[in-house]
Amino acid sequence: MRAQGVKLRHFMDYFTTTNAASRQQASCLIVGIYESGQLSSAAAEMDAATGGAIKRLAKRGDLSGELGESRMICALDGVRADRIVVAGLGQKGKFGVAEFRQAMGAAVRTFRGSKVQEVVNYLTLEDVNAASAYYLARYTVEAIGNGLYDFEDMKSRRKNVKTPIRKIGVALKDAAERSMAQTGAEHADAIVTGMTLAKDLGNLPPNVCTPTYLAKTAERLARQHDSVRTQVINEAAMKRLNMHSLLSVSNGSAEPAKLIVMQYKGGSTRDKPVVLVGKGITFDSGGISLKPGPAMDEMKYDMCGAAAVIATIAVIAKLRLPINVNAVVPSSENLPSGTATRPGDIVTSMSGLTIEILNTDAEGRLVLCDAITYSRRFKPSVVIDVATLTGACVIALGHHRTAIMSNNDELARSIASAGDASDDRGWHMPLGEEYAQQLKSNFADFANVGGREGGAITAAAFLGKFTDGLDWAHLDIAGTAWLSASKKGATGRPVPMLTEFLLQRAGVLP
Image (tube, rainbow, N blue to C red):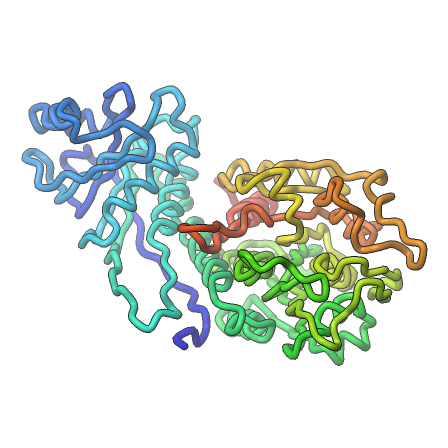
């Protein structure tokens, strides 16, 4: 097997330009055309420089303004660039951030696999919901980085079709925006690096990406960054900490559970840290409450919360943010065996609260509750847990938005705002005592499930029982952490949302 350790891939170099598109020397330029046939500002300038060549191609049907469509033109007289990618931009009045990203994705698919070494994006000259040069540069680099991602580490014969891009340029209307755009590109470079790490961890098979593998990845990050310290707590130590809820999940597996604790120190020693708690179930069979067979292979993605918080530490360490952030990752497999936890078992959590386990497939909350309790020792400013927690969340929100639930509405709004700014969107869902009432048990302090109704919220309500006195938010990423079918693979979400939240909190956004 080739996967000897997930690599933290450096992306590429960046520059800005105020040159007219026709005068810009590069391997490839990206311009656009709207559904109405109206050219983007750069495409119009290029059209004038070529004696109307772009419009003639559009009239002939060789170019499309449909969003998601893209065409490449080579060696156009009057233009210095080797190639021009003309992306469809959809309706002129509806070209927002999501459309910008979709157009960029189509453009990347068009030049991916070619010999392009330098790409300059001129779509940044369009009005994209009045987005600043910082965000347009950031969205550009993120779109290209995500578009070039592939995962072939486990194939015996790799395709070796790599786009040899070395530089990404961002076109600006005003030279005064250069510093802002360069910052956006640098932030995006770190975010792409983090998303790549999160995707790689998610896409690895569960016989490779075990709790031990996750722990070694976190330890490797600490060796690469002086600002990061990693501690791995084993099962014996967890028993001494009375983490019997967490340990109940690993009972059926030969793989030992790990509690991975990472500390990034970029702020003052007086500053309380943000604590990110990531669910790290590296394979979830459901345990004794066995899942149905179809798509069970996708349960390797049940550690995407862990991947996201580990990757976010990598992002902020690369950016050297002036903030303190800890990650606590409870990691285990959930498998059936003669030693597995049974429905009806009662366990005592680290907090001392007892839990009746009615369904062993509701295991994520069992590992997270002990991790949240453990996080108290850091006296956190806020605690945010990230988990592929419930299928009910997918029913509620589909695969578009991450569910946000919190005991602090201001915190929830801050996270939702970060999701909007980063185009890694969430949705603030309710949380209240009426949902917690569904968790009543005749035999323990409460049960680990509360029925089908409001399942995503009752799961959050379960975790809420361990958060008294904490400013806490829960992100259910079950619908957003990976894609299925022909596009199967980890998405790297919510690394952009978490990073934006921390950038805002650190006060470093331009």
